[in-house]
Length: 131
Image (cartoon, rainbow, N blue to C red; front, side):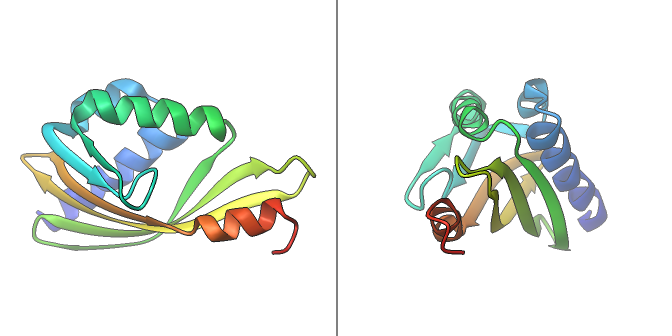
């Protein structure tokens, strides 16, 4: 099961975020699924439609973003993912990037729960040309 869930997590990041395939959200996000910490630390997204709205908003803010998976660790229903997002260029032409991690629990091949942590401080400092 762990290897299957790791493959689903890879597919989620590649198709949803890098290829921007919105139908994959319907396919892999459980109707009762919840994502926490995206886009803000206290945010809770419930259901695929709410997730699609956040997805649209983030991609409109960072249309050139690409997520690279650095490490995946799986145990049971859970997959821990460490990733780096290349977000494009700042107004000053500096490359923006953000480190993050996601902890995803799968149920019957769909995301039922996700916890996300992102280093927006690094992005802010890059925007201010201090990083």
